[in-house]
Length: 181
Image 1 (cartoon, one colour):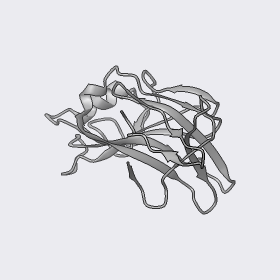
Image 2 (image 1 turned 30 degrees about the vertical axis):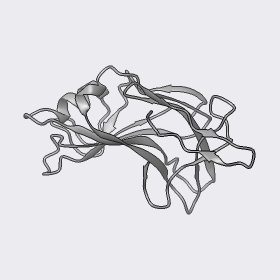
Image 3 (image 1 turned 90 degrees about the horizontal axis):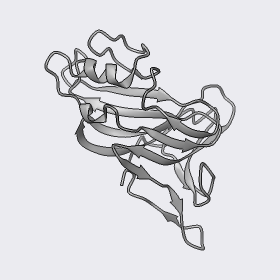
Image 4 (image 1 turned 60 degrees about the horizontal axis):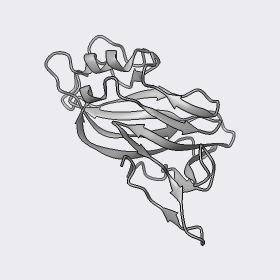
């Protein structure tokens, strides 16, 4: 996993969908954001078109984060992050056909922060002959405000692979799955 320093989620026995544990994000006035990522091995962004992008979650703020390079952003790296925020209610969060995706930089003629479908963002990222790739994908929580907040996430499905975060062992040891296998 590739995590931002001091912001990684933790595998706990908290429930998101099953009883074997989940990835927990706990935010507060001093830790306003948590995020955990996994390498996508430079997966062509176009390969995500029409593939399930889901996760199970408890009540609270959880978001898809798909970090790409080589996109039509007007920068040499073509870096941007594609973001989708799940509803705050517990259950299966399905971003597959949502029109509420947005990018942290302008993609083609889609403005930074403008809502669109993932298909539209993929087309804009790959416009002008660009071939965008996914470097990292993950889940973040950044609910805003100063109150303590927590969300548990499990069964993350990306590019046909589902990750089940699981606590194992009698002494509270943690089983670290290969996020995305």
